[in-house]
Length: 84
Image 1 (cartoon, rainbow, N blue to C red):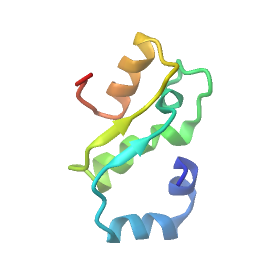
Image 2 (spheres, helix red, strand yellow):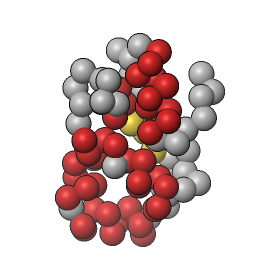
Image 3 (cartoon, rainbow, N blue to C red):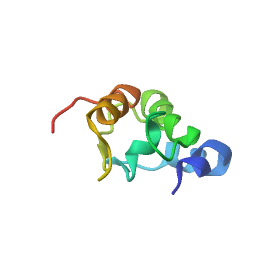
């Protein structure tokens, strides 16, 4: 599902709260960053999802186009540890 769906659809957020989520996978994660070329504000709210709803769920953030400064920004915004 898209980050936009999570931020505007209360039913989806309710379902996310009720099911067991084993991981969050974010494709095209460079759009989390304001440095990214396709900035989408709803992606930044994924950090709130993890922080307030799924705090222990690991995140896998994928991108093929992020330079180092964007990767560092994504890691910071999503509260990730840099393991790559």
